[in-house]
Length: 518
Image (tube, rainbow, N blue to C red; front, side):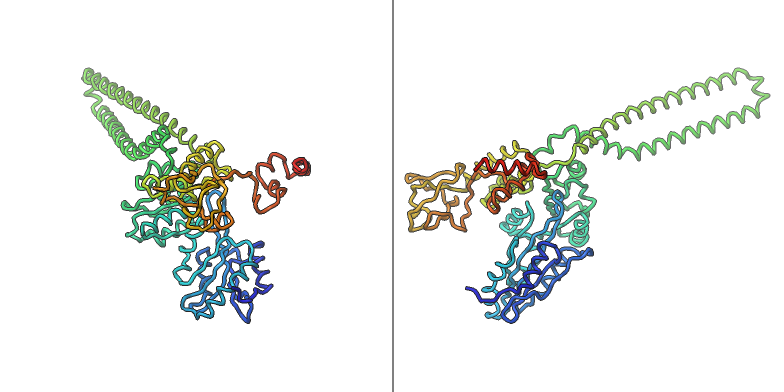
């Protein structure tokens, strides 16, 4: 049902400026005189007060007893992809508002949404708790945090999600929420923290455990071997660094021995000074008793022999100490070279956070179709952005084909759907997956109550609420389902680099290829 209320052209143009020109941080819309008008906007400036601060200002324009629409440009930074932004649409219809107000805003949502193209996510909120920044961010959180939030809520574990655009934000979060919070026992970092010494940004306590899910490599060795309260979660690749671990341990031991060595050197210097003082005093005594020494040549020779022996012993000890230092220095240089090579290999990627989480929950038997889907999304994102090789992608994909079989069912075309989905229709769906198990008329349905069955409409097409996972091969071209073939191939990395479409000759090659394809 539509209320007949339409958004003003000025409100639409402001949204376009926000989307295309990044002119505004947010826009608040209100229904006034049978039209949807923009009543509050926040212009983007160089003096950004921070995403959360701007968001709190944004929701302050939502009254407790009236409805509102709003669009917020959520901006956050990922370590590998830089700054990202997502446009969020809000429908604010508080429970304390009058029924007429709630109905008008609910029925007018379609009218404004049709005019606002490019929205990433919709938020329908009826209470202030649903408007909380942590709550909103957790729903559209970057890769890795979505499955974690789902698991923590499933086990009724109290937690807070704090987005950090950079390590400066992480330090501010530490100061505000961690430093003086003695009740906090665990911190989970997702897609950050691996490449730095995390204790430089988070106040360390003996009873505080920090878990890091970060695919960025190389990992800071201090997080792996230097602090037992920091746990780097990985797929086993960090266990294959015995030589690096040995080198790190030797260098750490050398650093700890520096103070002791300095104290020993000071003691040796004191002994040498004492010996020199003794020599000086002996010389003085010799001069004073010159007459007596002339008469006692034998005593003088003994004194000289004793002095020569002491000098020889001192020199021998000094040479031995010097050789030991040289050997130790050479060993340290070799270990430093091992560490230098480790860090100089360049940046690369390990297993993504969502895959690591799925592997963990599978080991404890809490795997689900939703978490499996998030893991597949994370793996696909790494492959499409060339973060992992095709060979590694194929290996992990084969594993997930087996996991898909565990949670999903694909039906044969001759199955009576009435017995499976309580649908009166006997229509069927095409078998669009070779990865999922197939059931025929004679299949034993016992034990399949934990599997997800396809939700099929009267025309045999999967419905919008169908949550089953199935595999399908697609061309690796950009947005093929939304663009025409020319634009998709033109903007695809593989095609663009192979044909050199940034040159006129490359564009002609692409057009010629499409003409040959017919």
